[in-house]
Length: 87
Image (cartoon, rainbow, N blue to C red; front, side, top):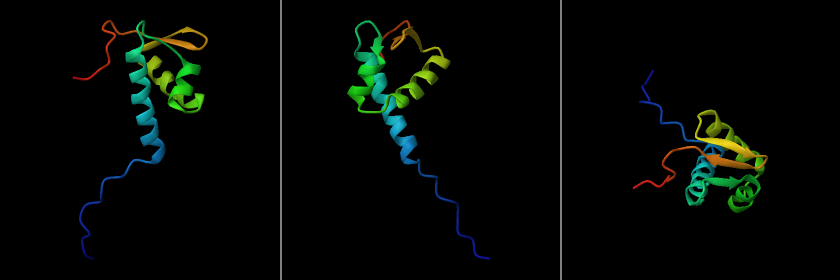
């Protein structure tokens, strides 16, 4: 049998790509917040995504202790240095 060479790298699914992009955009919102607090309803509207996607993101960030719930629909960035910008 002829060798076909290595398999091409798997391309990310549209879901993975959009969740990745949405996470980056969510982190940008956090970086722009003066007090590190973001309203999840507002974030959902600004990012034009279902609130469920926002929950997917915040559940992971909360699980790794980068954010915490401040109130029902508000989360707060927990890092000492609030800035999330990459230089």
